[in-house]
Image (cartoon, rainbow, N blue to C red; front, side):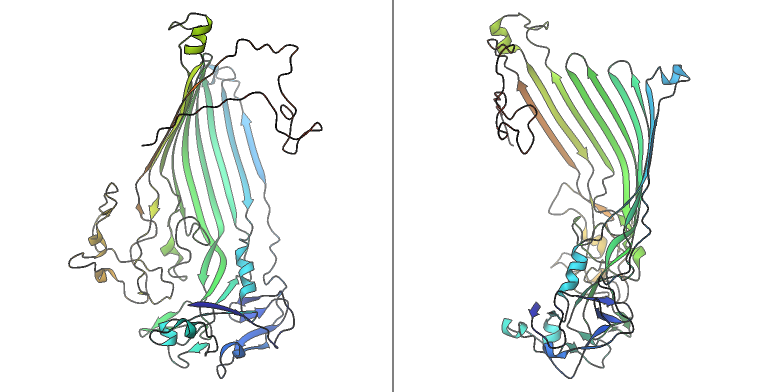
Length: 479
């Protein structure tokens, strides 16, 4: 159970404050020199006391970041020489570079307001309570807040949310270089290189991750539980090549096709797992073990968009009679669509039914006992990969004990090392324009107030709501 209990306390007078856990010191009340401690001779909220801290913490709990410089540079150049190669104003070279900064994710400083002493959050389970227990027992926070005092696995029940005191704004270098060449009057071809490098990216670590000594857990701060801390220590890089072709003819034919091959690598793709992966590191002391493909890494992606006016009806060779009936029936037909085809996104195999490493993160990965690449069959959702690759047997029941790494290290199966099935998306539309031959615009009222120059807040003559007559029809087939 994770239980939060808010209570009045005589040890503080100022509301709307928070605590930040300072490495090597402990939880300090923002804007003060009050160090939160736990009196192990007492229980529950009465255990929380303040001692003097060796410094006064700022109101924000972090030091200022004053060196963010974000230039943006770009160029476009049309060669006027070697016209046999570049043509006459038919080629454009483009490039750019920028540095961009990101703000600290708001949940991190906001969560510090939920820390003790203003709120008391404890994690109670069979390890802290001993055996099964009822909700009434789990909701009772008037219990000792430190367990196993004096033993190697001494640990507290009180968790803390914190932010690295020297956290810095995440930043990214983005760069591009490309060439576009017009070929003929309707076709152009473009090749671009796009890349980026991210630094000081936000990650979550547990400052109270234990070390393993003689098979037991030794916590750096044995009076507290998990100390989830937002830090700026991640890195990423992305490199890609993009080929784009455009064709736009005068007679109502438009094609846009692009193909991208790229690769994105990072140490973690999001703070709270919002990118589809778990938050937190398996081992905060081994960041290299987290290095792998980004959770949004797509190696190949092709997109085709087209709009084609069908060559049927008045003005065309097929059924081209120019009369009213023919215009209504055969004129104005158009087809359009967008097709995207892409390779799959990566995933990680976890062995998290227990804390095998002893690092108390429950993000453990198994060892790889197979050879070569993981045997996969993404067309079979019930058996997408071979469990034996990770030392698992399925008869008489699933048993993966052969792939459990020893305490004190993470498994050899890496983060995001395997890819799921690709995706194909097909959108297709057929449309027809019906001309209304009796309408003439000159000298007529063609729109009501609110069309044309109307904005989201309306016009001086009234709110948006008018405009020309619009009739829309749709035919949809799902299968």
